[in-house]
Image (cartoon, rainbow, N blue to C red):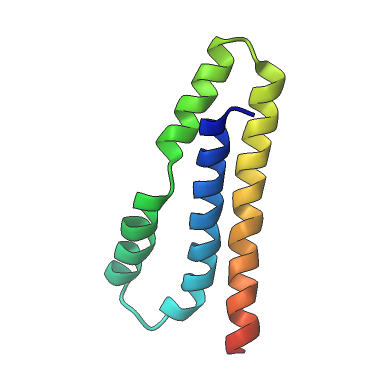
Length: 94
C-alpha cells in the first residue's frame, strides 16, 4: 500500500476513534458546540477529501482490486474505530 494511502487511513481511523470517545460526553452540550468539536476539530484531522482522491487515483490507474480493498478498509475500519472509541468511553464512564 503506498504511504499516502496508509496515512489517509490512519488519520481517518484516529479521528473516528476520537469521535467515538468524545461523543458520549457531549450529550450535555448544545448541538452547535457538538458540531464544532466533532466536525470542526476532528474534521480538520480526518481527510475524506484525501481518501476520495486516493480512490480516484487507484481507479484511474486501473487498480480496481486495490481500490476495493482500500475502500473497505477505510470505511469499515473507521466505523469499527468509532464504535471502539464509543465503547471505551462508556466502559470508563458507565
